Length: 118
Image 1 (cartoon, rainbow, N blue to C red):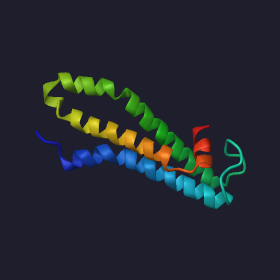
Image 2 (image 1 turned 90 degrees about the vertical axis):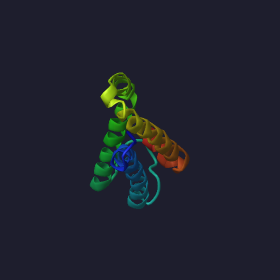
Image 3 (image 1 turned 90 degrees about the horizontal axis):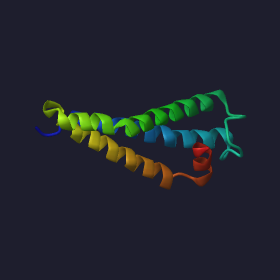
Image 4 (image 1 turned 180 degrees about the horizontal axis):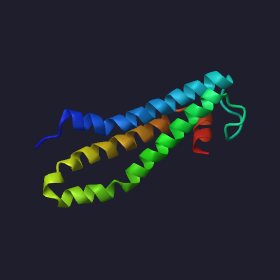
């Protein structure tokens, strides 16, 4: 049984949403503050920027937890024959998660990345 387009799309979509949230937050921050933040935290941020930051941060934490927990469902699917086809989707999720993480690290401005990590 081959991988379906819908399954692949659903495997890729959360990470693409995260990438969009991350870069839209960077643009929003730069525009709202007139530059990059001068300190860690959200002191002095407009309300909309605080909300955007909270959504992006929480969603990134959720995806990280999903990624770290991924070996458990993958191993389960390997051992349950009728679920074995799901391993392909989880592998796609993991690879796209790593790719998006790399894009977030390498293609973002350093001041924003320092703020994001701290």
